[in-house]
Structures are given as structure tokens and as C-alpha cells.
Length: 188
Image (cartoon, rainbow, N blue to C red; front, side, top):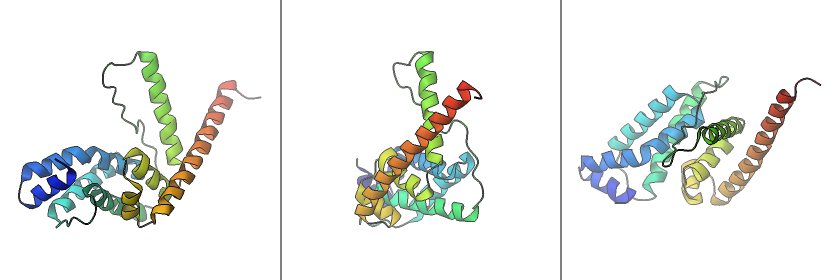
């Protein structure tokens, strides 16, 4: 069943449809909140509150269910960010790596984990609005139209912001890599 079919079934009282929807989109919502807020506990709270609001809402099929759910999650994240405008704390091991089959050898696993750490550090350096658009579009696979609906931007602005965010991410990764190389070389 599609997300829309599951939501329609839920609106008609099928609790299994809602459970399937949570199972299908829950990890993506939690991952989005974790990257936006950089707090495991707050991401868990956003995940729970998002689906509580979905369960108590009267969805009308004007957009995608995925866009609707991410709009709720985004608004909740923005509320948290407004409340705590303080220095963010880094969350260790932000990226959970799913190895699937076959499991890579230990060296490959270590390299992938290191690369994931660099990527998360680079994402953390992006301004909120760019990180948000990049996460929604690239990581969570929302279409430009869905991202526009979630964020209130125009579709053209979404494309522009994603492009800009990618450039900023590349620059941040280059900067991080350069700093690591200098630390390995030692003082000059």
C-alpha cells in the first residue's frame, strides 16, 4: 500500500495501517529530528509527538503523506530550536550504519564510520535552513515540491538552497579534512 492508502485506511479506523505508516516513515522522521536538533532525547520526543499529532489529525489528501508528516516534524524541531538558542552539543556516532549483507571487513567498516563522522561534522556546520533543505531533499528523498510544501519555500528556492548547501558542505568537509591533515603532520 502507498503512504496515502495507509493514511486513508487509518482515517477509516484501521490501526494496522497506522502502525505500518509509523514503521515505514518513523526512522526517517527520527533521523531528520536527530540531525536538526543533534539530541537523541529530543529526536525521540519529536518522533513521538509527530506521530501523536498525525494520529489525532484529520489529514486531507492535498499533498503527500510524507510531506505532511515531515511538515509536522519540521515545525516541532523549529519550536525546539527557538526555545534553546544555545550552543549545540555534538552527538557522538550520529550516523547509524546499516551494513546489510555482506558485512564489510573491519578496515572498510572503520573507514565508512570515519567518513560518516566527517559527513555529520560537515552537516553540523551548515546553517539550519540549508541543513534542513539538504536533509529533506537528499537524505530523506522528498521531492522539491514536497520540500517546498514542508518549508514554505518556492520550488526554485529549494533547488537553489540544495545547490548552495552542497557547496557549503563540500567546503566544510575540505576544511575539516585540511584541519585533520595538519593535526596529523604535527606543529610546523
